[in-house]
Amino acid sequence: MLFHSDRGSQYASESFRRTLGSCGFVPSMSRKGNAWANAVAESFFATLENEEVTGVHASKAEAHAAITGDIHGFHNPVRLHSALGFLFPDDDANRLK
Picture 1 (cartoon, helix red, strand yellow):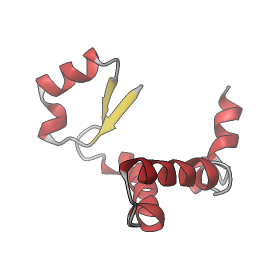
Picture 2: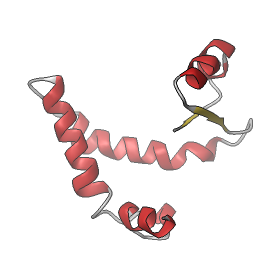
Picture 3: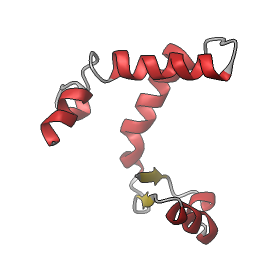
Picture 4: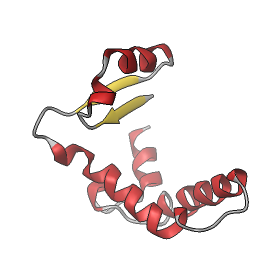
């Protein structure tokens, strides 16, 4: 599992990087001045927040189900992504197998 973050001090700290490694994550961070590297992820989360996350849910489990359903039921199989050459994320993932 890859953990990509900005260059915030909380993510660059030795203790955080050590914790990531102990949990099996590979830390990833762009070079200084390369802010565009997070643009795709930030765009996705902004869209998800506008479409689903701002809703009121009765429980954490209900919120999890709604967000997961939105990702796997719409974002990945139905929504074209310009960063993937206007492919669906599911199709792009299958292409890489």
